[in-house]
Length: 431
Ligand SMILES: [Zn+2]
Image (cartoon, rainbow, N blue to C red; front, side, top):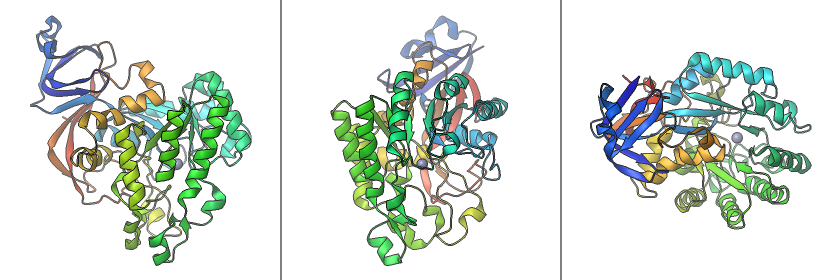
């Protein structure tokens, strides 16, 4: 069982590799990589694939997806979500716990893991809730849930308003060495807001969500991370002030990491003038100054990962007035093309940094690097993605594998066609 992919441009940020070469896979693991891999004696008799100069990189890892199973499989299932993942070049996803019922038990964890095994496409890592029932009152049983396979804890979708609960969660997980993933909004400041508070919301007469709603919670939880020594991971940061706080916290040695979502470096709240709910997400699209700050934080190392916050919704959930429509958009199949177009091609960051933000960066945040994920070092599982940077794709219904099609990027033409995705040496996408 061996496979040689030759004539590829291999980029691996951890190995500091960017050059023409080959990847030799034996029994699902990397046996050799780079210049000499094609002449390795074990390559004799291997199945050969000519990459024709395409980009070969470590499989992408998404820290933040909503696969809606159990409970809302009209929007997505673990099978359809996994298919969207591998089509988008992702070999591993981390699934949020706000399903119906929520994942606060070994039973739900095991159910989702069994569905993922049946789908047999990407790796699937469940998160469990921070609090039982996501009610923000009583902590979940962290140790047991980790034993069942959960890699982090989050009440994503619902902020933990009680600082004492957050303090305790960070303290307990500091002993277990796993992150608490925080969805940061102060609900009193959010009120009934449905878009960013600013000039555009004023003009449209919509209730706004101030950037301070996110920032006051980011500030609070950074202080609690410092106080407890716990690892705080901040989900989908969207404002200039939040990123400034993270930059400062990292400088001070506080255990904080963060992710941003592609829509927050692609779009601003001006798009809401269309009154189209595919531009409605949480946190909301912000101002140009916030978007610029996201770009800056991606470039200077403040941001650890690009995560999609893949949030499928049915047509019914979205096709209503803005105030009532569901929050969120799908993202697994647009993340890489948007990153290539808006960050790499526009020279905000290098291709190596982009790949780091989508593979080794997220792997480190959830300790998946300890499982050998996020890099194609010899001995690691052969999870990788092959992409043609010169082919442009169009985001239409035929392109999208997700069960839902709630995306603001409809009809966008972007670079980066995923030619193939491999998990442990097995091809799970492409022909
Ligand atoms: Zn969230």
